[in-house]
Image 1 (cartoon, rainbow, N blue to C red):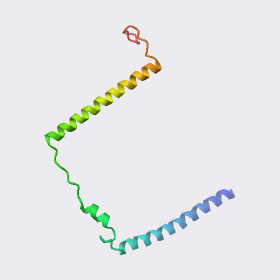
Image 2 (cartoon, helix red, strand yellow; image 1 turned 90 degrees about the vertical axis):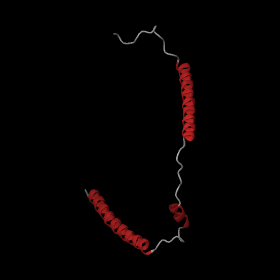
Image 3 (spheres, rainbow, N blue to C red; image 1 turned 135 degrees about the horizontal axis):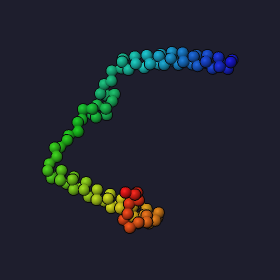
Image 4 (cartoon, rainbow, N blue to C red; image 1 turned 45 degrees about the vertical axis):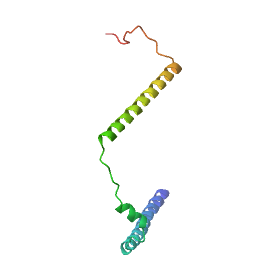
Amino acid sequence: MSQRDSFFGGFLLGTVVGGVVGGILGAVVSSRLASDETSSEDFPKLKNKATRKRSLRTPTEQSIEAARRGLEDKIAELNEAIDDVRQQLNSTNGAPKSEGGRAIARE
């Protein structure tokens, strides 16, 4: 029972000490951040990124068609790769025996 009381007391003491240290550290950091005025001279990269906007072009019919064709080509390549893998797996595992087109379950 003594060990349980000692654990519980240590746990409570750690909680209190951690809370006090965290509170003091949080107050110090927030006061420093509030008092320091972050100017553009301190962080020039951040200011440039914040003010620079990415310009988006409106898609044209030609660009949409080119993108569609590219996607169709990629889909065709993926389908071929899937078929190749399926054939490799069938040859590795052995093709399932066909029962003359009959269903496995009884009708």
